[in-house]
Amino acid sequence: MTRRTTGLTVIAALAASALILSACTSSSPEPSETTVGEPDPNATLTVGLVLEPTNLDIRQTSGAALEQILVDNVYEGLVTRAQDNTVEPRLATEFDVSDDGLTYSFTLNEGVTFHDGSEMTSADVVDSYEAVRTDESLQGHAEFAAVESIEAPDAETVVITLSEPNQNFLFALTGPAGLVFRSGDSTDLKTAENGTGPFTLQKWSKGSTITFSRYDDYWGDLAGVAEVVFEYIPDFTAGVNAALDGSLDVLTAVDPNLAPQLEDSGEFTLTRGRTTDKATLAFNNASAPLDDVRVREALRLGIDHEGLIEAVGAGQALYGPIPELDPGYEDLAELAPYDPERAKELLAEAGQEDLELTLTIPNFYGTTVSQVLVSDFNAIGVTLEVDTVEFSSWLEDVYTNKDYDLSFVLHVEPRDFGNFANPDYYFGYDNPEAQALYAQALAEIDPDASAELLAQAARLVSEDHAADWLYTGETITAVRPTVSGFPEDSINSRIDLAGVTVSSD
Image (cartoon, rainbow, N blue to C red; front, side, top):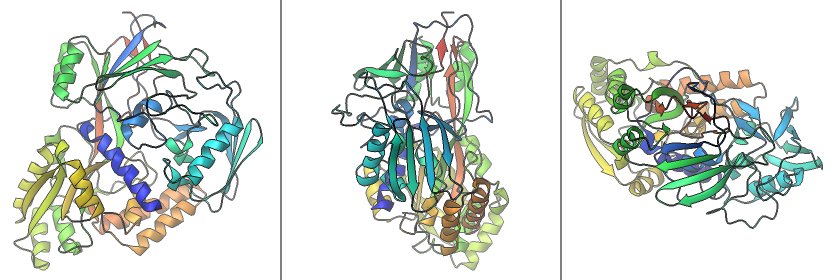
């Protein structure tokens, strides 16, 4: 059950971000500073997004579309993550981890209230986390597997004890598992909310907009705008048109091919942000002919990664399972250089000179990636048939039944190397050495030592050519000069809007 819950969370997140494939990156995690004039505290910020949530119950429903707008804006946890994915205090003023990595102590901020006006105490934290620990239907349940106890010595303190060290536990608390809800609350979270964040839900016009209002009794610094309107525009061209006609202050997930229209208009500044989105060409490691490492290596050597990124219009080369923003990242480009001739030799050695394979790809990814792969593989003597399917079919055939040769999806979750340490995952990759290194990395108390173990495991997986990581996704955001402080990095997973301001001109 644990593995399945974790996997479905990842897949739901990649589905929620699928339409954000064409996104672009920068090396700077700092927000954009483009304000002209004085900020207007009564302003409305209008943001164009791609994928609308199906409901607002972040406890029961997974997906990046929910986390993107609700975490830090409406709901908060004891800790949160910065744009570069480092962990920071939020509802907790400070936290301490014991030397043995088993005890996490949190001191709560004073004066925190839920949006219904009730005071938040340590009892609310305990009840929220006990629910995650004991209820398999709640998001983050798997991450609480090692939680032995959750206690509140007093109204301002929460102590969590683990049965074994888990280097990822604190980071897990930055997601839905770590959000704090009022004890005994009867709010219907599918359509309403009762969080502690700087914004409240004002209105949801399904199929169109979600509107937030500033929470004037917020415990911290008040939000810089009075209102935020999220406009959901799934069509990239329509999004650009809405931005150019003055309907939007910010447009996220700008299609790289359409970006020049916004830039040339002189009405927007374009920012490029980093993500942990891994454009993954999955190999079915458990089934012939992909169970032969020579075939897997040949396919990787046959891909012109730089040419593919140029064709997509955005992205950063990635040759291993860990992206730059995650612990354990290492540049592994030397393991899969573009070498079609060597690819042909490896296929000949494997007795696969007339190889025919099928690529199963969800239909929302477009045709660019598949067209490039068809061309590159044809050059090394591999015939690639493309099977474009509905996402529901992909879930059934690829993810659940593992009935595929190659597959392409965008895995957006940070710190998800564990997929390659799970032989039951749809990759079908079973390497005891990689599994042992990952287990050691989780149990390692020192974060630097843990990252080194992860790097070793990632190198091993890439040397084994368990998949090909075509690129790391990047995100292009168009921001009007009147807007200041809009985040740049990781915004397809969350957009903290409390510090954003809008000037009149």
